[in-house]
Length: 114
Length: 112
Image (cartoon, rainbow over all chains, first blue to last red; front, top):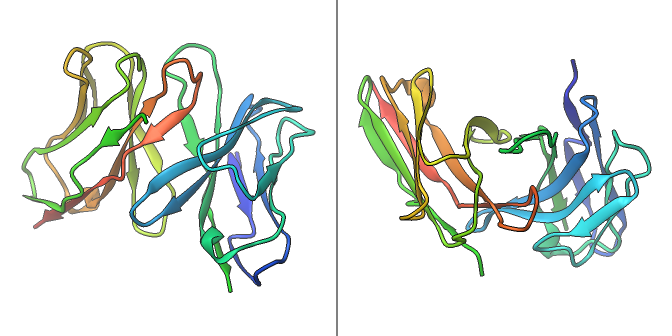
C-alpha cells in the first residue's frame, strides 16, 4: 500500500523556470491538498481539491497553478519560479465520511529556486 | 485572520515524565482539531484527532479539548526519547470544510 507519494523529492531550479511537483495517492481519497512549510510560518495551504476537476485557493495561492483530472493525481505547477517559492512542499489527502476529516501527508518535496 | 497559537519551545522533559503541549485558536466555530508529530526533515504524521469536548485517549497520548476556552492540548505519558519531535496543532476552519490552519509547532525534547 503506497499511500501518498510525491515526486521529485528534491528539486533545484532557476528563477523564471516552470516546475511541476507531482502528488499521487492510492487511497481514492476525494480531497487533496498542497501545503508549503517555511521556517517561521508553519504549514500554509496553497490549493486544495474536493474531487476531480474541483479545485480552490488556499491561503497562499499566488504564483501556483493546480489541476486534477484524475482522483489520484494532484500536480502543483509553479509557472515562473521565484526565490520566495523556495520551500518544502507537502501534499496531503483526506477522506470525508464523518468528522474529524483526517489529512494524511506525503513525504514532501524540497524545492530550491536559485 | 484565523490563528492557531503554540509555544515554540523547546519543551524539555525527562524520560518517563508527562509532556504537556498546548494550543489555542481564534476561530470560535471550529469543530475538529488535530495533533501531528513531525521529525526533523520528515513529513507531518497524524497522531490524534478530536471532535468533541473532553478527552480522547490513544495509547500514551491524550488529547483534551475545551471549546469554551478555545484550547486544545496533547498529553504524552511515559515520554520516550523517540517522542522528541515538533508537534503541530491544526484546527479546521469553520465553514471551510476540511481546510486546516496549522500552528507553528512546539519542539519537544525528551532527555534520558
